[in-house]
Image (cartoon, rainbow, N blue to C red; front, top):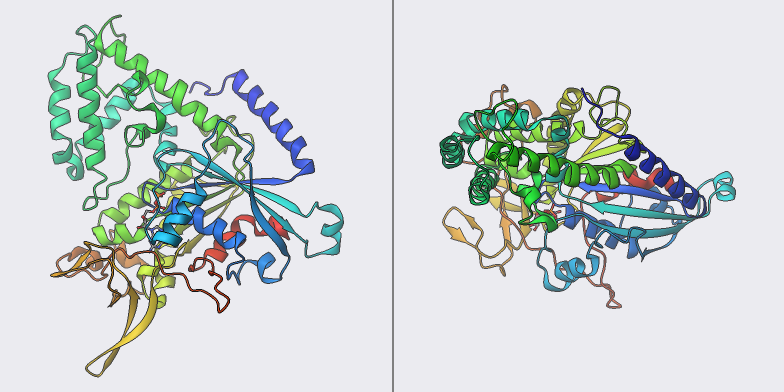
Length: 490
Ligand code: GDP
């Protein structure tokens, strides 16, 4: 296999690392990557993470906060001028003032949070500066899933794309594109309009796979779904072709597509990896397990596939495609299912067991080693409270919240204002049941979904007697903080 890093890549990473390390002597920093497929909950997670630290939220499982060692936490200017800033203030204004969910992640962004603290041990107090900068890097999981392309030629990419498109789950969604692609001659003269229509048709198929009721995992190229600032650029205007020849004729459609595919790898995928992913110390991967559970059997398998691919990107082991591109080693990875506030707390551990099972299988398959991996079921922002409702002689556990306008259960449509108690249903005690090859029964009957899932508005924040607004409520966010940065504040 050809080496994917050139000498200049490695030299550049080494130089960057040396200067970052030197700066780190004066002000230690830790870079935390936050990723997940679109709508997994990245924006909400980062907003809640920062808000709870700045406002001294209730974080009993986060040692430094619990033991009162954090003097203050505040936002500082980020070190990377070329990366957009995570729009924290706008997102918090939406969540807290308007009780609406903030705009989701569309591209990479970054935020620096600095924490002033006192070490727990006298020895550490002598050695440490008592300051830690946490650089939070938010980026679409779709972009990460492009990394395997670095090891694929245009022919291999084309072949793999057709194979996936012909699988039963995608067959109908990909038909229009497949028919169009098979109608063109790759050896014909290159034609911009033809290239564009092929690209548009292929991108439309990839987008259709992501719709709620399908919830199929993402296929590359990731920028076809999340273009960021590259919308409409030639490096993005290509598509797989059938019936390729080994050496395309110069000036042909195949030659043009192949050149653009290579440009996408060189100018989009590789720099993104080198400049952002290769510098991370810690990583959290958010997954929307609730949506997958709701979408039925198959979607869970698909999610597991996506997590395998994502974890594979963090594997700098020997023989990996990406060896040499890594400047640092990501030493901790947290796979977290967000939105646990849609379930009663009795099911939280069950959700976590499902995530554990899924992650273990994915980590084994991705051959991940060297990093500590943990899992969590959490809600970065808790939009519901718990209660009980009496039904005949039974007392049922319910969750209470304000469903978003337009959400429905059965024949009832919600207005976005009324608080409602919902019996969400239970997850099975045995995690195996939700996986294909388990009995599968849990997920197969969609006419009577076992869990009921509606989207809620963000919660109304409580105020103290003095009128101070309390920080955003959450479920187990403190455990995520402890795993991601706790040891740096020890
Ligand atoms: P992103 O695309 O990964 O940035 O996803 P967002 O953070 O924008 O989250 C997508 C949607 O998921 C939000 O608009 C909310 O509706 C929902 N969501 C995310 N996190 C939570 C959470 O902790 N609790 C609840 N109830 N909903 C959440």
